Length: 86
Length: 86
Image 1 (cartoon, helix red, strand yellow):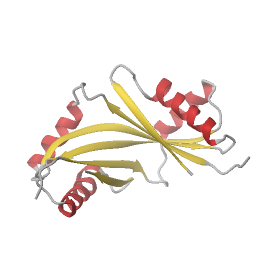
Image 2: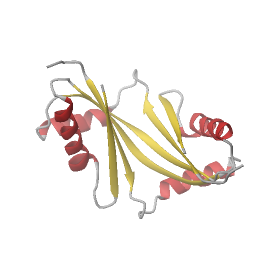
Image 3: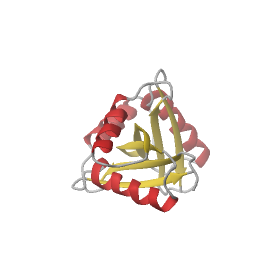
Image 4: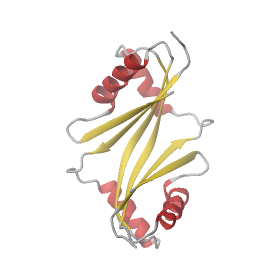
């Protein structure tokens, strides 16, 4: 067993079927500023978790999935994906 | 020249030297809920840009870098990274 910290990245975004007014606003602002070729902008949240390394990779994976699903995401309107590093 | 839409992902996070009270709050909540082994939580923003495909890859890259640097990031306290997907 090793104890190097492990990083996990969780990305939470609105489901495709949910309107994203914040993204739309950014898109409108960018267009006014002269940026071209933007079809859509959507905004989400991003979490960087540092785990203390007392977990195996499989344990870390299930812990992070549980945190993402139960705490960081509102399952009614949001979806998540995550990745582990190290 | 091709016109398939291209996706770009921009990740904006607080610089390491900047305190992240929102992340600390989430970390505290997770600890209270019984999640173990969490050393740090930091929250950032995440943007999904859809480009209309009228740009070459190199053009898209410089356009996205410019948007990320000039509009989506506050350079005083934040840093960004981005990736392009076809």
